[in-house]
Length: 247
Image (cartoon, rainbow, N blue to C red; front, side, top):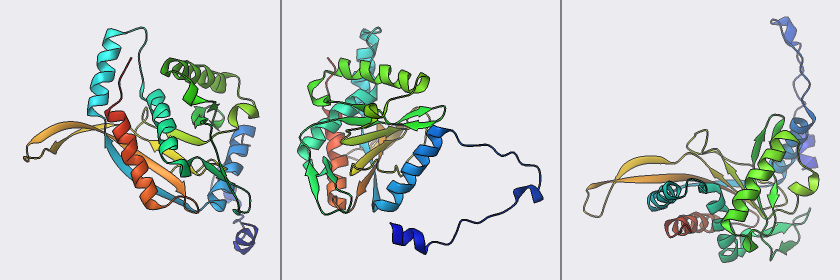
């Protein structure tokens, strides 16, 4: 990374005030720190992003039916995705590893801590839910709400953002069709989720059938993960959600 940075041209310097009125604004500590982390991760990791769509028609039908019958205990997509991620890390253990700094060693993990990106006023924070394989969907849901609120109002301690195995980054509440999330080192994968869309697709007989499709954008470290692994991971995510039962 140092050789690459030394080969770069220097950052262009300019006096923007010569073109019109400007205001100099200092970046907040959080945004500045996150920016440095993202720059390091993008330059240090050979990223590849696999884009896919999975059918969540049945999942959404069951989720809405559950929410209608349980208005005080509504379910959302993110906790189910966390449960799915745990199942997939067990099925594809090559996603549950970390590389050391020079890439000469791999550490295979046997725990399942899942991070998720939270949009906060000062930038972006990624809290990590520990031992998700040992928690019920209600426990995961409650922790997501509690730590998201803390991230937005009080901030998080570094220990609350460490120890992750894999990260989820959802923009579904805003929109989009796909994006290329930056891996949260020293993890080797991150899954981006954008807004589900409804459309008609042909069935086996060519007749149009209404489906709900969820776009997935899986960025992975190509030193550890190959394209076939990524494609299978996303397909397995769709299979998990297709058979997900609400209880």
